Image 1 (cartoon, one colour):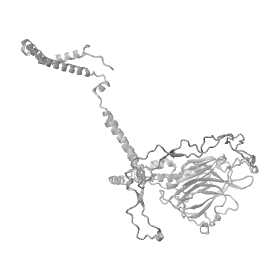
Image 2 (tube, rainbow, N blue to C red):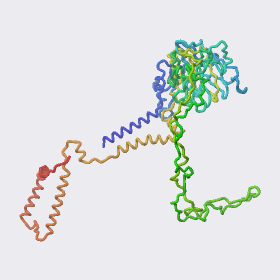
Image 3 (tube, one colour):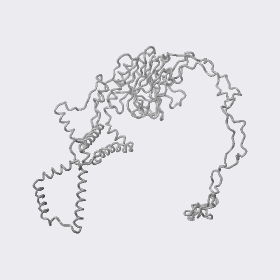
Image 4 (spheres, rainbow, N blue to C red):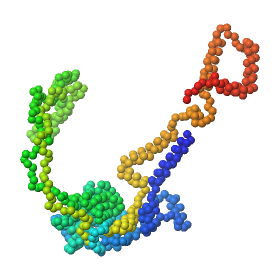
Length: 612
């Protein structure tokens, strides 16, 4: 029992420690140092109690008062591009000097909304955890926005990969709109002032949402080597659930990697959400089929596509009655007793009164509304009794001949195949058209979309280092400011009250099991305790048998005393004297009596065979 109590105490303490650990606020060292490493310039403003006597006194005063957990602060440092790159923009200069706002109008659109007059701004995020970290913000709702910037030099697809990445934060959520980026094709007539939706681009990449349709675009324009025309190729839809990236109001890193072997990867927050090959995982396919259906081929008129036909030799049986009804009255049914044939099921409401404004010329003759007949409430039924219907055993329905295999079946007709006159084979779709600018051409029903840290390079390690210096710092700051798990659980329960039931069951069920385990159970008998040790055990059964024998002897003695002619031992001086001597001997030597009992108990005659 003591061991069980110790186990219970340990279990309760473990649950208490687990609860405390869930309620703790994450430390800055866990959230910042583990993510950023030694390369980050991170300053912790938490008072650690090692700055002198004054700080120690302040800490003691704070400990005396219950206060909210202090949120660690992270000092922002603008990322610096290292390694080969074609474009790097962090907006930390606070200006749009290197960006060009479009002055064009969108074609085939109402004049009121055709102009690209949506506002852009460079500012901090609304709920920024990194003061000084600025970004490009889309400010207008229900407006066309277009802004672009030139690369340091055009990107040419050769033997090195393309790595494109940037950050997006939907600060107020997103109802319908995009946050994708376009890599504008290098052409002699490229004019960023006239950047519109029809401006040629090489790649379009990024998030887009409208309603409950969550997309992450990767589209590239492929040039047909035979005709010279461009056609959009769309990557397959990601299998991952993208909903969280649009609703959690956090900054997310979107990254596209194209490799010279035609493989591609789409990553969000440095996690792959989509991957494939340009040759096999794009729609429509890069290369057309070698053969196509002959457009001039037509199905012959006598072509038989029926796999089965009705048996022409089948005949309807003579006893087949197609006119027999499916159901007939049940002749065995009997009208229930107490059925009121003369009482209608519904009667006019006797309490109804004709409205005063009833006009018989306009409304017709007034009739009281119908109500159930109160006389039918206790009766088996009212009105004319009719026999209930039953399934007709002779019903067979309309006769149809049996179906047999069609001896003239020729299969499903298909037009013959002919060589595709437009066939070509491009085994290197990675070698796309060079691009020389990056642009955002967007329509959105939501405002305050935050963009930051655009980066284009041909070295993945360089891009990852840029991501660590930019997005990694944001993630650390946002993580340090997040509440503990317990606070998150309480917040979730406020939004969804049914979660309280889950919480109570999660906590109460283990406690109930612990109490049942610790405080209940079968009481162990002394025999069970002796079985666990080698100590000698008294023979309980033999003691009980001796008590029964003694009781039987006492009853026999009483019967003898009550029998006639019995003489008491009190009249015999010899017996009396003998008894007195025995009593004196027993009183003088109790150890002798105990020894005699032990001898009798151990005697083989008095010991019974015990069953295991």
